[in-house]
Image (cartoon, rainbow, N blue to C red; front, side, top):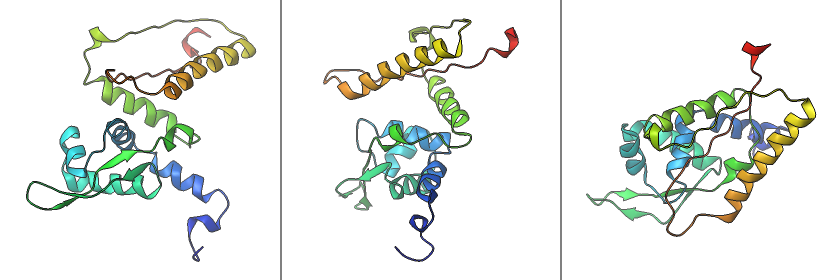
Length: 172
C-alpha cells in the first residue's frame, strides 16, 4: 500500500465505494452497462449528456470496480474507445449515508422514461409488528436475489424492479 491510500484506513475502502455510489447518475450508468458494454460516448448519448461530463462518473465507477473496462476499440474517427460493463459489485455494496435517496432518485429518473401504463404497480398500506415487517422484507429481498441469480433470459426484455418499504407516518 502507498502512504495515504484509502486501504490504509479501516473502512476507507467502503467509504470510497459509498462515495462512488452516491450519485443517481452513476447508478443509472451502472444500469445502462448491465447487459452490454458501452463506451463513454455511448453512455453520454443514452443519457443525453456531454461525454466530458459522463467521463468523470465512468472513471470513478471503474476505479472502484463497479465498471470493468473491456478490450479497447477504435471509434468512428479512429479515436480510442473503451467499452465498460457493470461488474455487479454494487449489488453487494452496503448502503452508505443518503444512499436510499440516491436509489429512489435513480428509479424516478429511469421511470420517467417508461410508459407508466406498461408498469406493474402494487401499493399497499399494512400494520405489521417489527418481526412480521422484517420477515416480509426478507422474503421480498430473497425474490430479488433469486431473480439476479437466475440471470438474464436470452430472449428477455429489460425490466427494472424497485421495492421500498417505509413507515407510513401519515397514518400514525
